[in-house]
Image 1 (cartoon, rainbow, N blue to C red):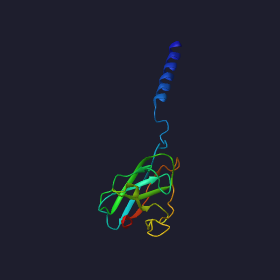
Image 2: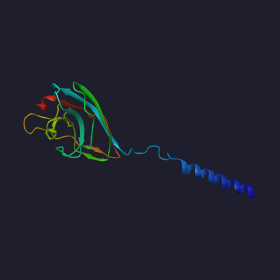
Image 3: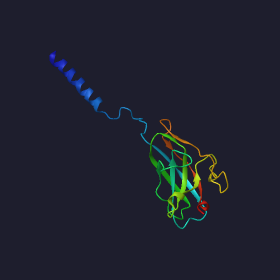
Image 4: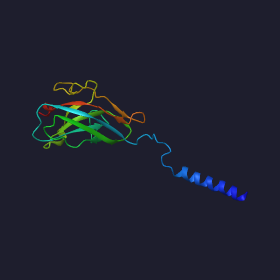
Length: 158
């Protein structure tokens, strides 16, 4: 009888160890960081100098460094698929396509932004200059934002 009890105890210990070592007891874990992805369609002639990139901001109008940005987009590109990863949970006030002047880095220009009317760049040459951007809220309910498409008007560089 003692041997039978010992086997039960041993089986229980092995079962508990197996359960404790399992690192996937919740297979539907919420991702820790968010992503935003989509496509930028460019119109107009590319500038001779400067970098164009997609950036996401915690403020509007943009101030300081962006929360995340793409690599510089190759000159002459007509359609660019982007993906910004590693975004913390929170509210992002603007997603933009911008150009930075290499001679005057503080003179960056917004060429396009994510807003309700995706057929337009959201940027105008006349006041009020910008439409109100659509807020992107990365949270447990929505960590991945896809098909966030924008139009960028390269003529705003001039």
